Image (cartoon, rainbow, N blue to C red; front, top):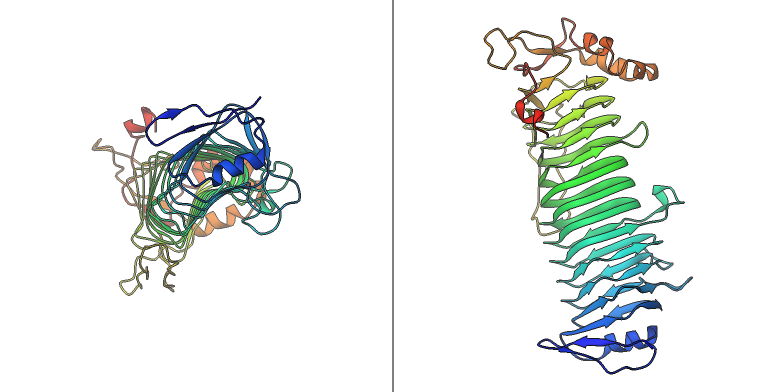
Length: 429
């Protein structure tokens, strides 16, 4: 015989046995007009679409599973009240119909906390929609493995929600691992994403932080578009998916900081397409087809103290003009979650490189200060031509790769290349 328990705001109370608790009984408990209650859900399968319309806490005991009924619309769990907490539930499946119907958990009110949820066999995982100050921690999502990523939904989607915190997630088989749109002040830590289109996707997202992000087998580990004022550090973007992959891809951004991260085994390690006033520092950029690709206006973005090693080509960009004082600034509106377009620019400016380590540079450091006496020069035209030849991949890591990048001529890429690997990398990045 199944039992239910509830916790009042002040004391723990053992509930009276009510017979077998089915889904209808669970929905009745959830709907009962008692504020601040905690409902303990016994082990068992509850088939239906649960809606929470009042502040309460739902705690799933081991073996408690909320299962979406086949061919029915609606999210499997829909939180429509502020201040709801859900802990320890296993959720299987999602509905049919709109994007909201296809999502396992929808939060459309502020102040929700989701802890220790396991979601599987769902088109999409959790959607925070106008849910300011939501918290997601210790989430496991496994989407539709048999579908290509363009036919899946997002593991976590945050829309028009400010101050959301993500702390601990393992996400696999999704379109995007984490998609943040029209939101500000989002914080992410310890997020693992595999087998997805984008690991973390930022669109019209401002003033956020991310650390401990790990992505594998993605088209782009970190995709930042039309966003500003993000700090991303101590992360790992590796093992790109096919020829169009990138570890970090920025498109029309401002003040994006990438630091202390590993960007490895991608078609392009870092792509900057109109990325202004940003910073990339102390990153390991290793074993990529091309380390850096850029286009458009990247004025004000600086690259320093990065370690480049084992890349087929260090650069495949053609815009080496210096910044123009007439460059238009980005036009960011209020950061309260509204979409703010960035003003276009006709200028073509590369990021500024200084004091990076390049394994293809073979200059001298006669004064032994750790900084090369001669700049690192690179021919962008030849690099772009070589990158367009599929057979060039056979030279990855070969002596030819280093020799071709250290021939005389070309443009100055890094005025003060580091003559040796910084000790900080030897201790682990």
